[in-house]
Image (cartoon, rainbow, N blue to C red; front, side, top):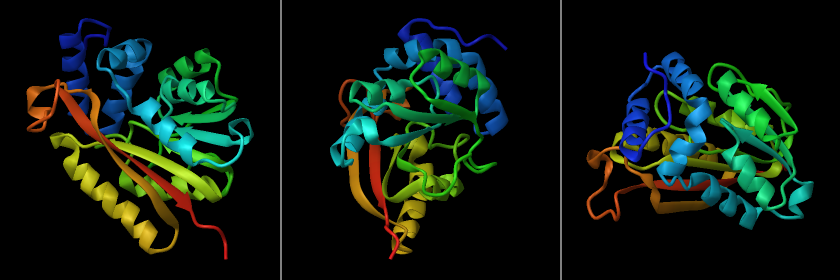
Length: 236
């Protein structure tokens, strides 16, 4: 198979569009392994805004000085979320990802105090219950990546009263996954495990990889996405 390499916008759109169609996790991880060296430049070409928007949402809700907060970046990839966190004063950053090659890129960025290999959905997060002030998962909630069944793990490692920030795409090919995700999120809230603070729809999430992904009335060829923010319930 040809190597995933940076290129012009149409090449990037074709490559990322193909990745959205990979539903098998092993194949998806192989793709990300090849893609890791060019990931940052490719998502920049798509004007991918999720890391900045998610961190903005978290920052507005997290109490206390950012440098005191211990943060877990789940499916951290190359470290795009960490760069946004550091720019806002967050310094205690841990990351996990299922791709060794992505973790190599994250290590090179020098922003994480600790990095771990973890395939969420197949194994638990490598942290005790109630460890983190905030947990983020940006960009990995879709078919072939992190299954909805793994969501309780994000909640488990958050401290009581801590925050969990999640994002997903709302373009046509991801709507079935989004529906299942929201059912999982709602079930946890109904059980009293956490409380929803934010559900923010974003019209300009990233450039579409295909005209079929652009919703009617969408502007400038962008797809939409959504940011969820939850607070873990404190112990009685």
